[in-house]
Length: 562
Image 1 (tube, rainbow, N blue to C red):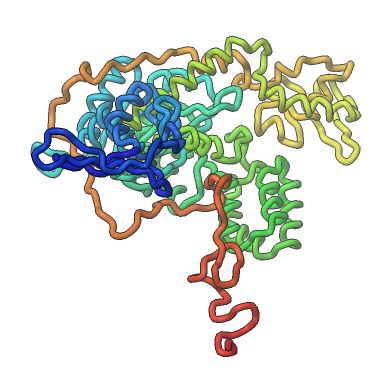
Image 2 (spheres, rainbow, N blue to C red; image 1 turned 180 degrees about the vertical axis):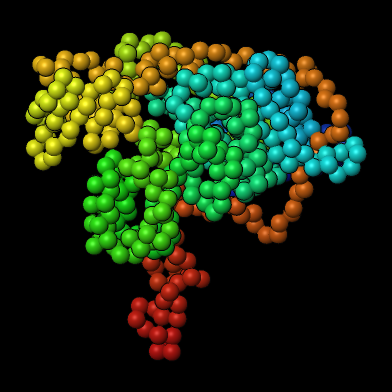
């Protein structure tokens, strides 16, 4: 029940259910000191759920108090998780807006307001650097007045990542993802890959938008603080100007290499209207072909199947074959053809992209630390020389090699007959060669080399051919240095200098819209969504406003209607 009126001379209670007629009314007679019940419908027997969204005492302040300990430990606690927690703890339902307000209130307690978060960012990064040696960070600010600077961009990399990254392959994937908080912006991420094929984030940055200037600044910071003198291969999307930007920072003259994500190029074919799955898969096979002969053969097949796709390749990327085709890579990308692992990291950071800037930095710190702890435990449990996922790649090759015929020409030179082709193989440790280029491009023995290792003339352990990057010891060493907790805000050092203000906030008219142009590379939650249905033609996929049959109804024109 609920109180409808509560006055000095009247008091009324009614049922919270709209279809219930129960009512109690009392009034105070003139000159009396007591109330007299004038209307009462008898016993109230309505069964009302314990939890309901009309509980007036369940305020955002109360919810904030309940979720604050969890929010301190998990900054990415979503609104949905908050609603479920309150349902379990308080046995009541709350609205989405109420949970959102409580979440923002808790974030404000932990890291201050959005505006305060920008001024606290240098303090938090300084404290994190003091707690975790070798951690680096740098900011780039816009000076507006002598005592005031506006935030522009920030770069940070954790000390354990920088120190242990030398145990990972010299391949770095760079990608960007949009931030959806009050001031929006873009997060740039550099990711490597460990010995077991897992994500290994090495650097982060926040900037106002994804453009050439910000990318160049990010890559320069990455080279200065993380990769340093190490010769690396950068894998990125193929967007306008990125080839020149990467070349200026990671010059080929210094031994660096730049490659493109093959899957993004495949998505570019869709943009020009090529949606045939067979054609798109054929293009992907062209890019992943190990041999130049196979590359040319598949390319000729594509020409006969889709001339438009073949022309686009010839006009746009044929001269840059080493950027996207594995056959011309020279072994720099170690068989990594896409930036999918960088995008997977974006999914790992899901739920943190709408946090204040300091909270987002803290979220990356705790997420990466969690991954380090879990993978360090996994490394101690590994008992094989090679990492499990690497062995999963080699086992099918071993099975295939059992059906091959091997002809010996010298103690170290063989010819392998697969039944359809012949492959000359030279066995010389890690300097071995096979015509298929599988070993030269990835550092893992191909099925032809494994066939030679199994012959009675050349009994050899295939582990001696595998590159160091794939061994369990390298995996353990990549997670050997521990993170250390960052003290509470009370202990953060004071930063001398101008106050850091947030960037300019532009108020947009109308309903807020997503700033990201979605394509085939974006991950969407399809489960639980409903398709659009037109009220005019009853077909799915559009609304009445965009109906292609507008003006017609099932074959009858508007003018023919009676």
